[in-house]
Image (cartoon, rainbow, N blue to C red; front, side):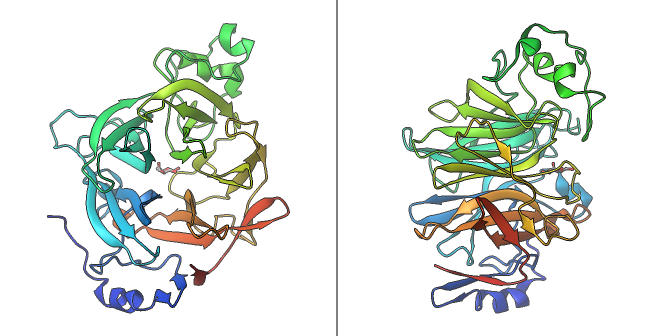
Length: 375
Ligand code: GAL
């Protein structure tokens, strides 16, 4: 039985009776967002899958205090038909018991889970950033789990460092044949002691696979799925085609934004163009957002700058991107999903969802304390 935080019951009732009026749905970024039980939604670093006319929100189940930043429970799932009334569907992927030795043992770091549906196999596939227990963020791995039913149970298959033994499509001769000054070195954080290509982190990680931390998934119109992750000691974003069953990496990938330390990637497609929203690399503290556009999902990508209008603090309105949700209304509607982390009391992290607007060939976000969406 999961511990419920019930202090939110009263606002929950108020909120639940007020988030929908006629065909208008309202959002209150940064407030407590109660589920059908009056409990603040616990799905951080998440993403939303639309399946069979319903939205399914998957995210990190956090617990209280600083220890709550570790994965003590698993990945939580909620469902909704209107994007504001969310039903608790329980834990979709459960961490395995302490002492089990599993990569997803309780106390590991399991972040930014995303779920996609494979029409060919009929399976739901979840990928997430995984740091096996006890090694901080040194693992830089991706985990994959699979389910027959959208809500659960997801079975953990394995964790990997992607694309071992494969050069990206845009690798240079220098990567392939040049020296590897970074051999045997690990660099943390948001800087390197030199240029990423001179250090040749790519070649360093060829044998064991590429590092993969902050991540998202994107499914293109033809059903091809891509895994997008911060790699090469966070310095460079890789965009990698998954295999047809979505359970592995195809070996086809590109390096993007080398040396820009892009994190928190969220990708969407509109009018034949691909867009990315990303953050810089400052841990739980929010920073100024970045955005980019491309004609091909694998790039090349052109940076479009900070999509946030009048973000005077330069903090993405005190949030960090996790997903951009295409709303199934045929109305060209997209919602920015961000996290307002609370690393001191992880369970109390808040959600900042904002309408995505388009102007001058780019997408933009504006601060809103409350906004309405017509369904
Ligand atoms: C952020 C990242 C989060 C989490 C955090 C830990 O940069 O986006 O998902 O990993 O760092 O400090």
